Length: 29
Image 1 (cartoon, rainbow, N blue to C red):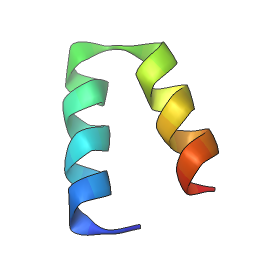
Image 2 (image 1 turned 120 degrees about the vertical axis):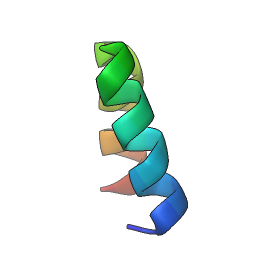
Image 3 (image 1 turned 90 degrees about the vertical axis):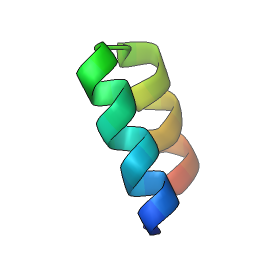
């Protein structure tokens, strides 16, 4: 997991966008 991915994850987490978080989880794992 790169810094960019982590940054995006933190941003989406702050916004509370569950769909986006799930997308990144599926994409990165």
